Structure formats: C-alpha cells, structure tokens
Image (tube, rainbow, N blue to C red):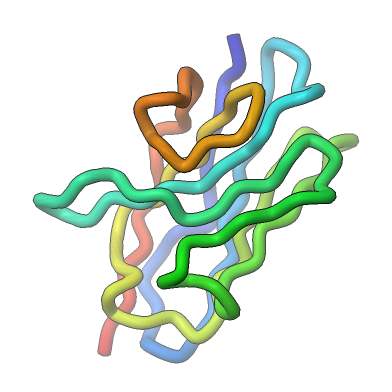
Length: 122
C-alpha cells in the first residue's frame, strides 16, 4: 500500500503560478511512476503528467505542455507539479497517483491521493 497526500491547491488569478505537492508514505516509494490527473466538475478524470522513478522520463498532456513541470524528490518521497501561466480551464481537482510502469489511463492506477482543488479566476 502507498498512501498519497496532495497539498498546495488554492485560488489564483489567470496567468499566475501554483505548485502542487504529493507526499507518499507506506510501502516503498521506490520504482513507482508518479502521475498527476485532474477532474473538473461533471467531467472525467484526465491525465496531466507523469514522471518515472528515475525522473529521467516525463510526459505531459498537450493542454499543459510548456506550462506545467513535474518533478520528484525520491529521498523525500515527494512529487511536485509546478503550474505556470494558469488558465481558467485549468480549474479542477488535482490528484496524484502511483503505479509501476507508465500509463495515461486513470483506471490503470491503484493508488490515489484525496485530491486538491485548484481554481483559476479570469
């Protein structure tokens, strides 16, 4: 079991930045790909970004490419999502998730955090 807890959400104006963090505990953090998903009201949960265990590989949804950066600190068991130039359409609940191997499909992830709300005002 891996327990994941997100933090850092909030209300920001469009064009500003926000950094989300995800702390992992429980079973070893080693080897897990860590991902971020988001879910807006009434919509499905969508992939945002992932980072592999070594940090050597990252992948982003087209909608956030060039604006968001995912990083991890394996010594601290944390993953970060730096979000720059935020837009109102980035408003959603953001979730971190963990699995072995890479995937952009939410139903392929067994471990999830509780989510953190990000609201971007225009």
